[in-house]
Amino acid sequence: MVKEHHVRVYKSEENLPREDQLAYKIAQVAADPVAVTGEVTDMVINRIIDNASVAIASLNRAPIVAARAQALTHGPSTGGKGSKVFGIEERVAPEWAAWANGVAVRELDYHDTFLAADYSHPGDNIPPILAVAQHVGSSGQDLIRGIATGYEIQVNLVKAICLHKHKIDHVAHLGPSAAAGIGTLLGLDVETIFQSVGQGLHTTTATRQSRKGEISTWKAHAPAFAGKMAVESADRAMRGQTSPVPIYEGEDGVIAWMLDGPDASYMVPLPTPGEAKRAILDTYTKEHSAEYQAQAWIDLARKLHREHPEVTDPANVESVLIKTSHHTHYVIGSGANDPQKYSPTASRETLDHSIPYIFTVALQDGAWHHVDSYSPERAARPDTVDLWQKVTTVEDPEWTRRYHSLDIAEKAFGGSVEITLKDGTVITDQIAVADAHPLGARPFAREQYVNKFRTLAAGLVEEAEIERFLAAVERLPELAAGELDQLNITAAPGVIDLAAAPKGLF
Image 1: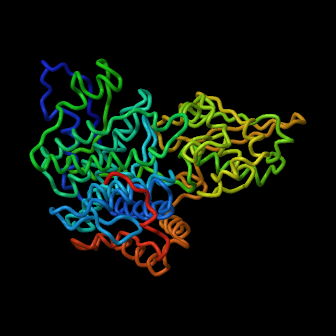
Image 2: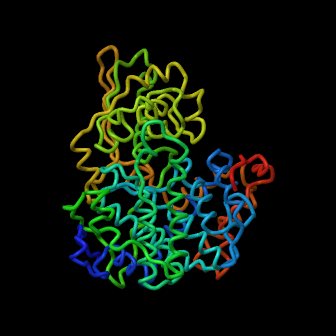
């Protein structure tokens, strides 16, 4: 069963043995040749489909166009055949494929999530691991094992170590997890993975300003950068280069100076030797393109739109009060004290982190669309702006408790809402989890993942290519060494204009 490991800060003279360091224990998990269960394999396939869906939908968005153009200036290195970039046939160096594909996967904020002590999008592990797998000619089984490790490490770090409390961006858990996943994929030894994990952490700690105030395009680039660093960290470690030690526990390390300080104490759960890596099963994807804490609120807003159409007109509404968890209130609610969350000229990245905006549009439209719901015209509609300004959030201790609960049956990411009408009527309702959550009204299964892919690929990918990709990914366990290029998707002719990309230094 899972074992919890006590992690604290050590003074240099205490000389913490390598085998007692968290990075080393992570490396031991990564090097464990334990078999992947059928249930986990099926979920890995689901998440590869999910990532492909949102990457394809992003192909012509500015951050992807720029990242793809950068990648295309870095051809395959001599150590392998190179890696594919979503949407095109060209091969590039694996770290640059991880970069371009990582941006594409994250741009719409539309793939999987895991929330606990911290939060994460563990599907961000897939682009760097897949890029390395394509470069070196790995098999489908190799890729499955690598991805299972990436999810395992990231989920368990997120369960134990809070980053956002200290304004450290959550991709600091992604650098180590992707490095560990690459180590599993390549069958590296514990020492090499240990050094790679340390570098993966050391190079990916940054502040949360990328998700604060006026949110910029870097929001999509941050996890891609972590994935790129993981690939480079693995390369350096394979060449015998070492990392800061102990990276987590050292008196000048990450925990002591960036997190809970010299008196920090964490219990990090990790599988024991021979125990299957199952953490991917604790994660959940998105039906809607928005911050995960907005998923349930979109579903509740759609329900209220059907049942109480009068609430869609600001002339009828006095106020809308959302009672929710600490995280939702302070990160995407009015507790963030970001005036941009109420601005009709805010960036898309800002609007998808504004629950007042998202709830208002879903309430009025009874639907949510990954493009139309964020358009400048939609955000600036006068009746929307009027209603939007009446929406506020507050923290409710019970919803905060449920948010942090380790009991999956009561863990919740929603809350309750009170809509007070001008005539004094108060309409109340609540929701605990999104409809697509495993415990929701309509849990996502393979059918829903495939439908999401078909929907987002429509008009961007030819039907024959859609069918080819789906057939290939569903045969993932049978794909032989060198066949993982089949997991790339080529856009329909005319969809991507490489010549129109912005020019830079490279």
